[in-house]
Length: 140
Image (cartoon, rainbow, N blue to C red; front, top):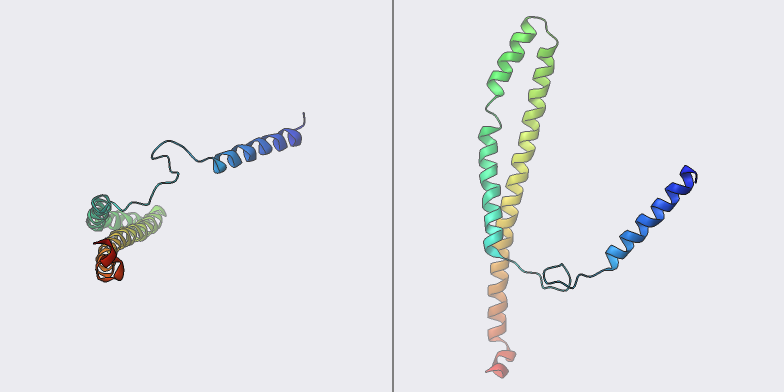
């Protein structure tokens, strides 16, 4: 069998397997099929809290080597080593990446806090709407 024939057979087998997995709904509880979407406020709150803690730690711990790195880069550059400039570039890239991670953690924390607050407000509004509606009269 040639490579092209073997490759075509492998692709066909993979495509068939993916199709079967996508068309299959697990029957086990918690298997991802047919359940209601749940908002567990404790879990979401814990994730938001951890994102905030990581945000705070990254802001300080992500910069602890900046001074030493700058000094080392300066000393290397002073002695005409090309690695001094490379170390400065590395430090700048590191700082940029830390800032990106800090911003991402803030977005996660703020987004989850907003979601929890928004969900609680929606629940209160639905409860108020339901209890004041004509349906409430029929349910009593």
